[in-house]
Length: 267
Image (cartoon, rainbow, N blue to C red; front, side):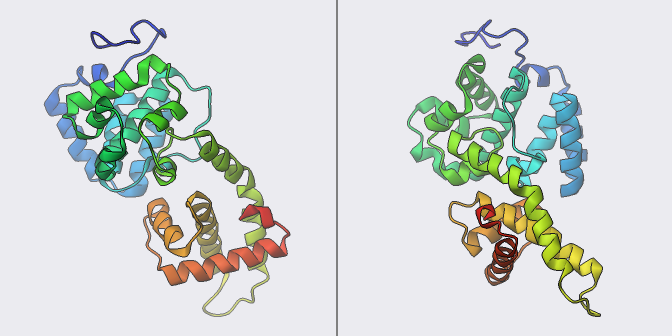
């Protein structure tokens, strides 16, 4: 850890990412970043998930940086909501990635942050960014919800993050995960009853199922499940755009399917 860190020696095994990155030759790191930039969105996320799961922290960091630049928020990088009980280094890397996203896409949030050191995470140089993230993490002693408060994060910002979430947002994410499979089944059963035509066959039905399930997930992560907000989140999740009008039509079909299955709590 850096000199003067208040968490020195707090939890054995803590290795900040900055110290790992210093072991890589600058030109080699730059070359890796250039090669990674050539990957498409889906390949980037696939590679990130593998690197994250295997604990390849340096590679996961590089991939995270490219995903941030491409406008893909951290919550999309993971197959399911982040659970408790993670190692200190995993928690730190998730925190770092969330702040990378805020730094790039919510720079205007600066005025809402009360503490100068918190502001520096969004405005400082690269080395300052790493130093202040490590300071705020406090050797793992500050839980996510406390950091959410110190950064004054909005509900929308918390949903875009993977780890920086308050208890209510985490609860909502857990409920969404629990309802995901039953909702998928209800939507599939509803589409099975739709008459097949030359323009709407089994392939189109499968595509509609995937799209509606994704829209349902997005409606669950919005401050208010409005069509415009759902469409915005849908673009983040899938990389595909959808108009507000199309989102409104699809959301009504989803509601009807869930009502038919008596899943009124799933929306």
